[in-house]
Amino acid sequence: MVKAKKSAVKAGSPPDRSRRSAGAPGEMSKAAVLAVSGQKGPSKRAAGRRQVEEDSKGQQDSLLELGGQTERWISFVKQQKLSSEEAAKLLLDSFEHKGLVMHSGGCHCGAVRFEVWASADIHVFDCNCSICVKKQNRHFIVPASRFKLLKGEENLTTYRFNTKKAQHTFCKICGVQSFYTPRSNQDGYGIAPHCLDEGTVRSVHVEQINGKEWEKAIKEHKTISSMSKS
Image: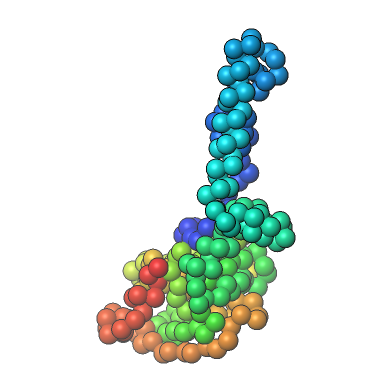
């Protein structure tokens, strides 16, 4: 089974509240809580109040780093009903993938789903090697950083042959290959355009590749090796 290469930003698991440090921004330390609540002597309570002030200042500083955009940021997050992480991802994506659109897609049964950042005008390779002809493996190439497997890793299986370098990944349930790792671009993915959801592709340009003479074709091709570079 092939595991999708890590990409673009993934949401992490919910934070473990029991492991938060006492000095985390915006979180009152244990010593401060005890002191302010009166469970310590006068000098301890004074120290606790100072700790509370420091904790509060740390929280304010984290917001003040946004300068004059603080209120806009808070308002945007609230209006869009986003977490701070989701808002940050949206901002990063808009810059890191400038000029690209996010396509979504998957296999036939829906067990495998992915998203990929690529141009709305996609450049598709139609290879005539033995396996590409058999399964009609037309694909466009993207860097691994622009691909994210949303679900279905456990439903993927892989077929390899000859040099064993290409990873022909397909769904164990419906048998559809919606993406794979090409021999020519092992640091990226080959995406099947016919497995994308409708609405994001503007045009498709198809280029024939002489996979029967693979080594020669790849050596002579001017751009294919760079298509998987971030």
